[in-house]
Image 1 (cartoon, helix red, strand yellow):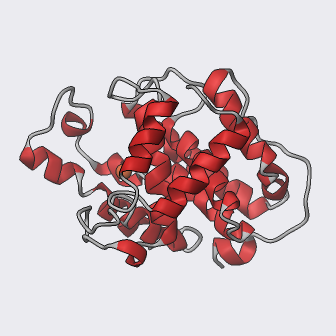
Image 2 (cartoon, helix red, strand yellow; image 1 turned 135 degrees about the horizontal axis):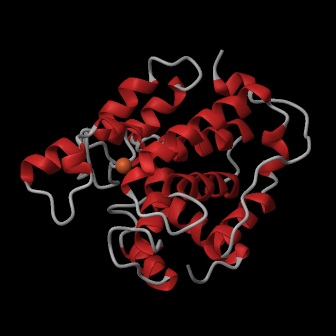
Length: 238
Ligand SMILES: [Fe+2]
């Protein structure tokens, strides 16, 4: 039985700790405000799979320096599900986006450490290996009954609206909506997080980048939904 069909149930007491300071606190508030925690908490199967996905995500994020209460994958999960809620997606879809955020870089578990953890710029062959991670992650998930709906989302999360992304070069609405959404969430977090490989930029500058690349790299509607969510949650700095 799929996540989508099992993720319907009664509201209950939140059990998820999304506390911490600074960005983590604000992102936690964003999710709490979206009433997602209540909805998630009584769904035993969903909770078990979410816990498993968190465990896997902690391994995926081993390549990131730990400087925040939330890992990169968990922040992407929160951002993606909050954007999905903002776009009025069905709650089952929003819940799947949370899992998709946790597992979006699953394939990196299978990338050799000397490439994954390399400091500095990857050469062409190393970049080609790194770019296999969406394919590997999707292949792994499509074999798992609960997670198989996530496979297309994970496969296409590095596609671009103009068709210049990877691995398939899909364009526009041929890219699954969940993948477009996680792509925007990941880009925002990668630009602004202190544990990014790059020197972080301000939220204001990251918004400028997202807007400038709307319609080419990013889905304009998804970017707009993120901006509205950030504004409502009061996220002005990281
Ligand atoms: Fe990725």
